[in-house]
Image (cartoon, helix red, strand yellow):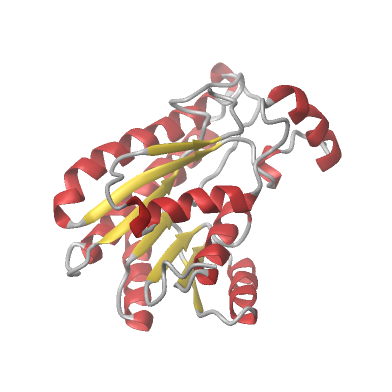
Length: 255
């Protein structure tokens, strides 16, 4: 095990489950002190317990990423507790109105995806950059986009695809804007991953495994740990010259 993040403070949004929790655990295993954020306290406390049970340090902070003041308070809490903000992973995201064509998509579903997936990343970037640009060593930010967006589209996911395409483009623009500030920004775009989001309506994990054998060239979903490994690479000094990348982790679906 390497310790690429020893002495560093990392922030992960949407860390109560799925990819966010996996990233938080992986960062802690490699030495980071981790601030986990989300809208519900109970799953965040579970993530903290997993980190602390393995000997790591963590802090849970409830925050709604669509609210600028809550994100500013989140960053302040991280700095107050651990002294800096060195890594941020903007993972919080939602998929609503699944299976509905654009003409049938409810406006509430559209606004919720844009508010969380796009505005949430924008506001998180603002709060994180404001802190990182004051630090001598800057920082690294990884936004979680999706293979559904700029890389591919699926029927019934146009709203989600639009929001994630925006994340990919925002990542590249922000990367160019802030690399001179010492803030390095990239994205990871997962495909089908071993989380509830990749399950079809009423589908079991066994059913998903059968479907993946024909839908994904790799023949299976990516594990949360595999996605986390990509995130940690981009956030680490191993990727010191990687700026504005959008790393697709999808088992070859968009190759």
